[in-house]
Length: 388
Image 1 (cartoon, helix red, strand yellow):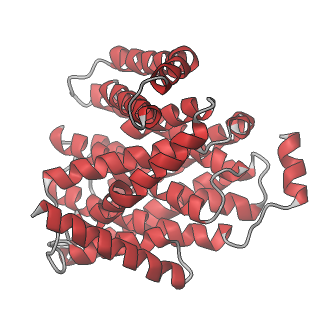
Image 2 (spheres, rainbow, N blue to C red):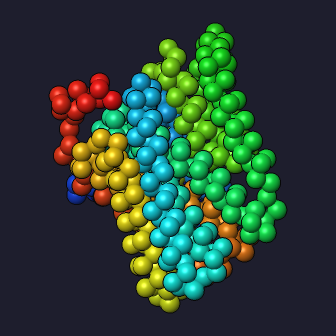
Image 3 (cartoon, one colour):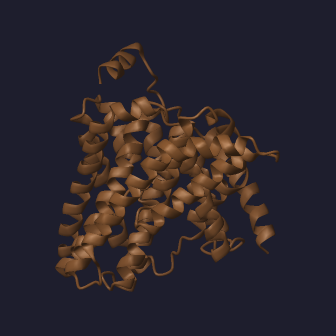
């Protein structure tokens, strides 16, 4: 059955992506929407099985690995301050207004804080694909978005640990902070000293595709280490990509990993987001879903844009960066699951927030298209980059 479902997903996602592109939208939008149509909510041709989730997880890890491979490290360094501003501003706005919204709809204080925290999460895996299609992944805006996503992930997880420690959860805040520090310290050391050495050693092996295999081993180990220490796996794979991008094997790894990823795993990831959507009982909470969706979109959009603007971007680029931060994706789903288990979210609110997360994910590509599609790299922008 899995084999048939994979065939259906690959066929449908490629056709839907092409239709979306012909209609002037990023192809990823079509892949997201076709997932909803294929899934249990509409046609029921594809089920949200555990093995499909695992394949999807590999897809998002590889997508962020490719983003790391294609990151301009010099641009990344230059946009550090901008990334910090975008990341922090993109947390403050949804956290504050999410808390207010929770109090308005009658949630207890801790649950209201948790709602704000969940709305503060960001996952740029969808944005990465849109940036690639729009030719902006290697731009100053792209580097800022990726840097802000790393900052966002770490800060939100730390605040989550802090909140749960006060909410009665069995959480050792000091240990959580220590794990994060150890993770970044270890991966920076490995990236600097070990990764180039491993690639050189594997390149000498008399087996096929030894370099690509070693790159994937590094990618998956970094992702596992990130997840083990409480950082999102996609951050680990992204850092692994950056590490390999600094070696002479960058071009070979990028070309072959893209072939593997976009042939199977990435289409499954995009489509599975729609497949996992559950719309049962949506009518009963329709106004709450609409209200929280608007809040989720606007707070990240405006917060991220404000952070970009005070960092020296023009308004069009600022709105584009804000739109790229809107998608909550798998990061928010993980936080929602933690909240459900810790009884900081009721089951009906959990179901509502799953739909809200899906809405933020679906609206992100067309929003980015509006602000990024007509903005090309101009001489004055190049001059601005040199000054930054």
